[in-house]
Length: 216
Image 1: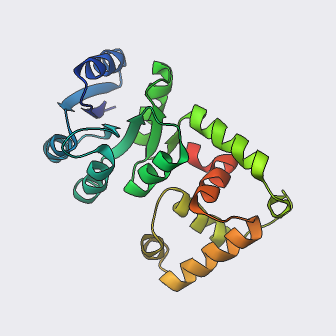
Image 2 (image 1 turned 135 degrees about the horizontal axis):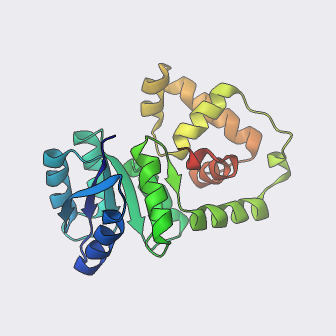
């Protein structure tokens, strides 16, 4: 079986070296390149065809969020695993919109990083347990009667919400499901109304609760 080809995009040399040591200990992984900023990450991804790009969110010249957006356009087969210290919802939403397949905290154990890399390399999604746990806690604390377990949404509404949770636009979802943008908007609005949702982060919280963001 081919090894998982990993490109590390991180502006701190010490962190890069640490990541290389962790990955070098894995028999199914190899580091194929290193980048100190977002622009270099994009250029290297074009040349090296990595399976996974470990993308630091905060980098000079071009930050990880913008680099991820561009990379997903030029290197669609590369799965981006965002690496950050930030736990807040704002960062998570931006990372999902940019097209990342996963989100892991720098302070997480090495074993969690390895698990995340394998998950996204296999085409799955990954959300750091620390972030998932906090979001689930907030969801439970703020849940309204509308969100009781007895509420049912259709399979199509589920399909739309899953794609929204991972940052796809209405236009992208419409193209993927071969439906009109208007139809997608209706399904999304109906599902949000049934579940008492007011924003995208509510959808993300619901997705976490359903286990949609931990698919391997």
